[in-house]
Length: 170
Image (cartoon, rainbow, N blue to C red; front, side, top):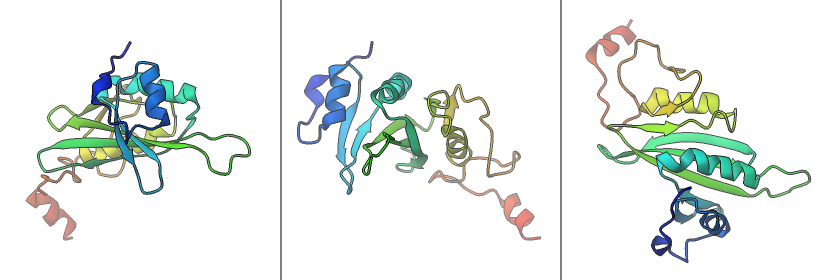
């Protein structure tokens, strides 16, 4: 099972879901709350799949969105998951935001396609734009850019090759 370093928790940023994950020995780090009060957690790449399954079992049955971004030039890439607990007659369903940071030299994250099918196109877009490899994804290939495109256009260190400019000029 996963290990938890309980001394690293800041009690001011630790929410109910963080406490639940800690109780069940899932490794994570609370990052506080967003402007709407949604709890934000950081999970290591190697812990993400087991944590995702646990969150699904907890009731987060809907992947509202998955996106990715380049945190800093030469720094980490981040895959962000917005999960929602969809229940009958719920006016304000519970939400959580999970961030998985990976190095740009080995950007691999387990795919959650098998947990939430809606991750299929969203993970493909993150792969296409940033080059994050979602291990276990059944159809991981470019979705927006042509297959012949070189590089990952949304990385902050991306340089457009000259031949693309000539190709697009006609």
